Length: 101
Image 1: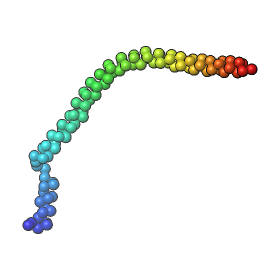
Image 2: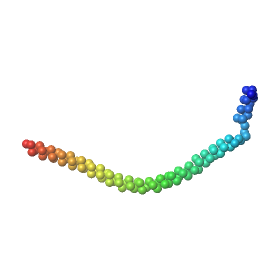
Image 3: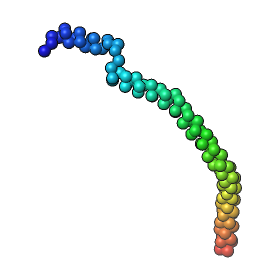
């Protein structure tokens, strides 16, 4: 077994080495690929996605606008129906009270 001093020297020489190893070459390739993916491919993908999203959003917006008006009118219809129902109940109760007297 090598003395501690020799091991320290070997570790230092390995860590401070400027020679490319297979592992360092692979790591560099991975980093370059990651950079290419984030800088080029991701931007292209976002452009494609945004374009298709806008195209599909327009018909949905038209549907929303069309049926939102109908829903709003039905909301008005609902409130009118509630008012009429309340008035009819008041009239019915009034008629019942009038018959008892």
